[in-house]
Length: 305
Image 1 (cartoon, helix red, strand yellow):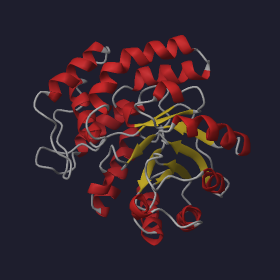
Image 2 (image 1 turned 90 degrees about the vertical axis):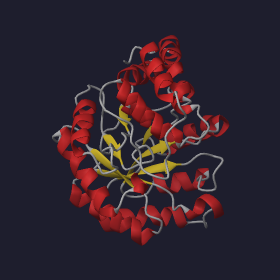
Image 3 (image 1 turned 135 degrees about the vertical axis):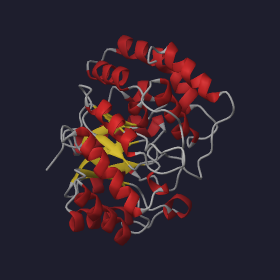
Image 4 (image 1 turned 60 degrees about the vertical axis):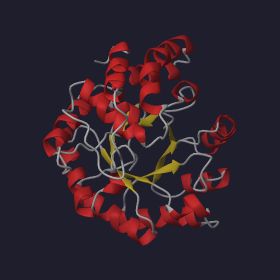
């Protein structure tokens, strides 16, 4: 049942045409490029970087199908499962299975971001989605500054449930990272732990099996090297890669809002010659004037364009 994501799992953007429709030719090009890189273990589509919640259910299905086709079965396509309620999310997961998804990344119910969750509700969400769809699932730990962040016991409970094979951890609180990851590792040694700290890769790279990051969709080659350095406990090499990428990190992920990072990812792909333009879907907005050039300059400085 378990997939092997011990390496880099990019979360690619969803390309659009200039008039805002899904660009299937661009998906084919993007997916084929990422899927051809040794060390890329899968692609997670329809997440935040992929503007998944901005798509209709029919569009979501077609995006999964297009990415599945683009990689020709060489690596798994994992679908973001974002539906607000458990019933809706389970139906979304069943559609993903039919579209060819090999696993699901389960987002918290969005109401929890504001109001928090009732005890036991996250565990039930994962139980129902897996029971109804059969889809292998990835536990998604949200940032510590949201109310949709799971406490340690909730994480352990979900990790122990049937069908849960990996964790995407983006707690963004290094005190919690340093104290909770060892406990999760000890209690669930088979759980694949993947960092999603695009802006804190260096700190988190030494404790994980891999990375599940939007960053991987624009800079897969150095991130694969960084993962290898982390597993080898080679701090000097990891630091060298971190410093090389810092101009890109600053221009993509150190903007006013993390949402701007999705727009910046598309400009980075323009700089790499993978996309022709950086069209996004509302509520995302274009970046400030000159940002495209700043991102292109950063990519060149990092040897990526």
